[in-house]
Image (cartoon, rainbow over all chains, first blue to last red; front, side):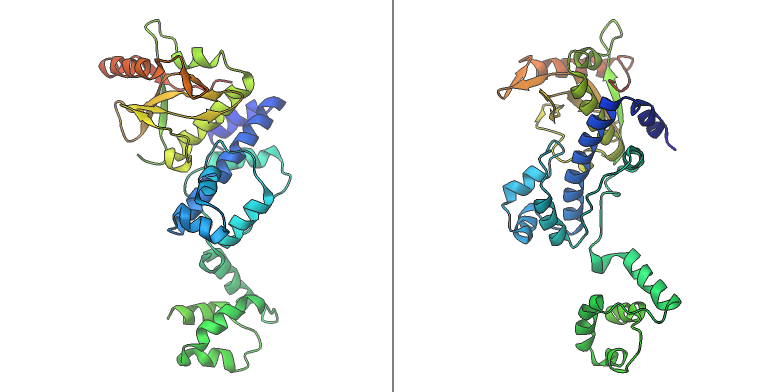
Length: 174
Length: 129
């Protein structure tokens, strides 16, 4: 545990401190995430605005650590544009202490579903440990992409009972 | 500028932190918000804190932090390690788009010049609350 986390834990004994600090921290986090994820995608504010059907000025407003009037519907539109999940839940202040302790430009980044290495690893684990598991809905995109490459058709058309995401992803990038 | 940076407070001739003297006059709520934003700056650098760093006057970065009042702490990069440090030089608030005190930028610049000539006129930043 870092010194800053220990300091924060001590200060969080004060109710006003923990509430005001956490609200301010979450504002910083969300604004920072919108910017970090947008830059990770190589998008301008205008591009994100286009993807969310918003004005660029609105994106600029949301990418401000001082912004505090968050609207869940707006955040959902942004999450959809980035192809990431949006989680809104009540949480222990311990999570705030932990998150505050790991804050950096890098920790704000979230990959999109198709680019998420953890999803790929998860798929590989499913494929290797549970041959009876079927997760077909996420596979549609892969099948379409594979279908355009005759060399890989075998994977799709050979009546494989359980689709192996790892193999498919390897084939897709081949 | 790297991601993480170290924060310092400019000291008066008597050895007091000017930014702490200024923050003592703010509400407790605003001091907590100030603590939070400066923590983020230290951990993530300005790149992870969009729009925290406001316009620059000469060498002075006029941060913008909204609380019950709009706080405008004035900082400079370095001035000794321009890649890894910020020094809090002076504190102001903003009302009706005007700084209070009006000459805050100039006073911050004067403090920066003083510090550049005497490294002992600063100390590691400590939180306000």
